[in-house]
Image 1: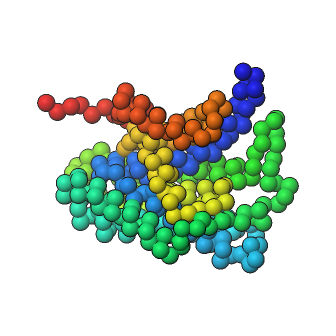
Image 2: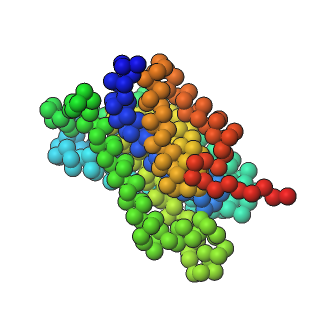
Image 3: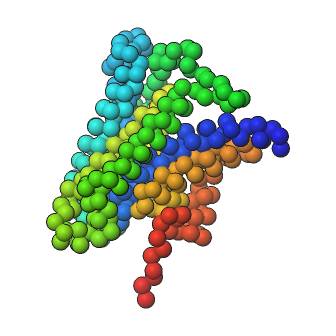
Length: 310
């Protein structure tokens, strides 16, 4: 038992790292579902493309695996460029794949989402190949900062970076939702689309904005994970998408703050599970949680129970 307690602080740090990533992905699912009541199954592929965009930015700003600019500027550009391009990709997906089917049966939207997912995955496979791309991050971090130990807990620079950026982006989103007119319009649209239209809110614009923000956050998560685990391939979006969806369901799909809480909890559960079970069972935890939540509390921790129609 003492050994487990000694590992606990380290696993909490690891859990917050994963949790921040899962939360960013889950937000994309839950924002779209909150307004359109549909699941954007292409979101995992947006995350994957975000990882590749981050890799390309690092590649273009490096010579012989050594960055030509200061490391902080390179990392900032990787995240910013990724968010801009994946946000734009989200807008394109909404305009071409979802808007024409907005009034169609839900099954049509679901099939369209799956089609976009398969298309994006194969597009990247054809242009990038099946071989994983490696992030040469060692040259970005001074040797003295690569690993920091405090109180028996080992902090890698990249884990700290992921936690700071992920939680910083969530804080900015919270301010946007709570304190701005755009945020109020988004909340009004999520609550009642028709009423929002009568109040003069441009619902189409809000929906585009939702796809832009959700995709940008998902893309940022892809780059952060690439920096953390130093590689990306065309298939990473599938598993990450499932984890993000699980986090959204756990927190209460349709509830942005529930998605944040769900992502953090899922990351903590996964990391703590490796304290008691072999690491190979880590991925099983997410799906066990998904099954349990769907059986006993399908509306999630912070979601609202929808009354059954008689």
